[in-house]
Length: 251
Image 1 (tube, helix red, strand yellow):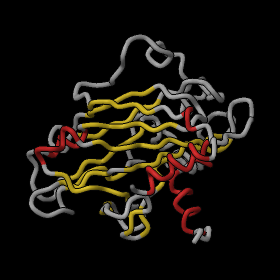
Image 2 (tube, one colour):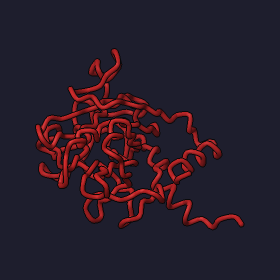
Image 3 (cartoon, helix red, strand yellow):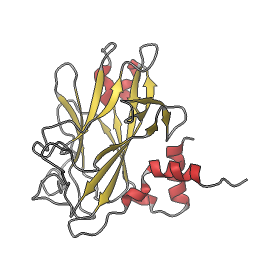
Image 4 (cartoon, helix red, strand yellow):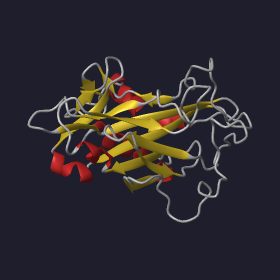
């Protein structure tokens, strides 16, 4: 059992409302946004923290989209979710790394969160991305694919804040799950990404890429539209790792 699964057990044992976790499995759709019927997001009722006209309140649905860019065509492959603001939630992405099935050395995929671009291009700029998969880390032709990712969304009165038109949302984006080359959530994982921005990954045979699952954990910081503070960041699994190592263990 790795630390990520231990975290869920810890939450349940201490009655930390783990029932509020929403685990969603989504197959990667290679033709746009995934949606199943009408909901608050497809109906345009969800909040959008990058959009000044749609600030986020606690317990409101939020427009949450993840995507990877095909290195050959430049096309975006995306999945969309409709989670509840400030509720600890996990999302399982399946098959998104299969874009690298036929690729050789030097091929990467980056994962982006829609709406986290720079201030002057919030939905078109992809600079706030994270390395999601690479052909350059593993042996025997395997692809290293991110296994655990943590996304933090920090808001002020329900909206992202920007230091300038050229900056990404303040304290928003992927919180890195490796310390140097040690995964904080699983002892058997490899780490991918540039120095100081590495995440836990697993070496996956190319014929298994379509079935491989990545767990994305979403947390919230700051305040809602009504200025109530968000609390879900206390459930961040990276914090649990620190707790598990900082507290003396029972004999």
